[in-house]
Image 1 (cartoon, rainbow, N blue to C red):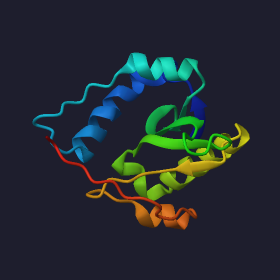
Image 2: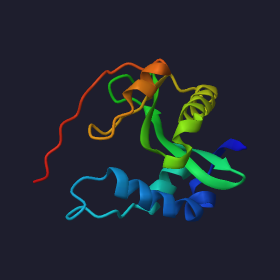
Image 3: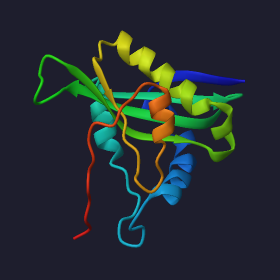
Image 4: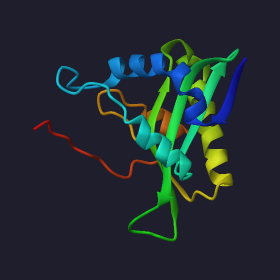
Length: 149
């Protein structure tokens, strides 16, 4: 049975690291020049400030998915608390079991209880999950373009 939890990165990171590597291998671009090298100290500092929220999915205690949000007031709308997704992944073998839907809904409920007004979730253009987000009531609000220089 899948369980959804809000956890602290400092207590669950080690067991999620192998999944992070699988995630990077699946979605990263420019892998030959941009290597996976998370700044965990920065993540821990944001967590200490209450600005990092970590939500996990576990199957019989084993990690199968995560979604992390950065939470803060918006520089343009300082009276509004925004949660912007940092990273989101569900193991491929759990994607057909609605784990992603339930994980996002669980995170939404927790973020709402924490006073968040707006949730922003992004997708990679080459690995989109737009239909899932639209099913959950999200709408496209912005596009980003990138260039390796």
